[in-house]
Length: 393
Image (cartoon, rainbow, N blue to C red; front, side, top):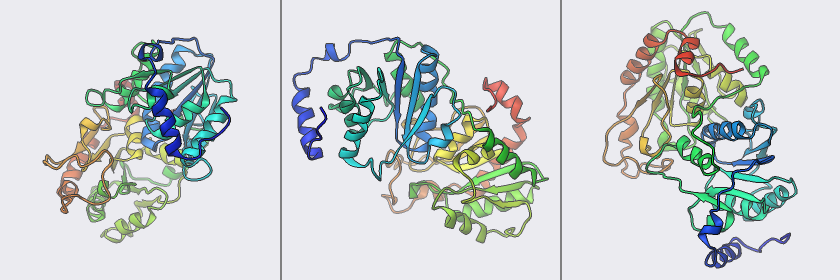
């Protein structure tokens, strides 16, 4: 098993040939542990990793003495370094040394040497299937589609994409292991140094409420216009609020464009944090805001999961895809258009050429949602108690 197929096509052929003779009953024989070393695999985006936490919580509750290792996309590791469920967090460089089918095979062979007895794959992809297949971990659990998963995993379960949101789909993996319905709220534990950094940043602001704005997104069609963010920021400043502007790596120019379009660009209550925060620091600051406005993005999940009132502008994507924010403190702004959704993530350009799903949501509508969230908010600790969530340690 140490050799590597020369090409992805060769491996695909081997998988397809083997699948034809694989008996479903043997493949789906339920294994319920106990397990002692668990590899939890989720190398998709930030939001996907956050939504995987309830699955990690369920696995930890079932086998609290097990060493669980979390495998995430490069750059996300520090965010999860303080999670009590994980013995270790590992980053996977999908665009560097771990790229492609060859990189996935090498990772799988490294896992084979780690003495894991359970692999749970929260990410459905061909590369993830290769990792699982190459690892030869005794029990390997993933979804039952695509077809090659039948060989890559020793156990599979249906994803039920149309019936469940993403957290419920992921908890379906726990159900396949015999773990009963568990807490479905992602409980984010942040490093103390990040909480201290957030305290320092916010201590310099005297005027509450704190309104956070995040105009960026990896997917261009998910971005609400910067001019709309500029107008919303001016409305927040006019109300007496402090405005904190966020942007991820490579999005600093977007934040600068928002500021340039503002009338109140020189206000001392406007703080530009674009490019200044580590991912844990970003999460910690978001967790202390009074309201956070963003699109369908990874930071959106950092916000609602911590109990921060969240206003999310949705365009190309819809609720049925399973990634809406949860909780009564979350508000989604969207338009009912026949062209929605136009993709799972949102394409680079609007297929219809008008981008009406985002352009048609006005700053005035967003401010109304923000003002309502601020009016209904009686303090972070009370919100979290009502929602049944604990404070970030």
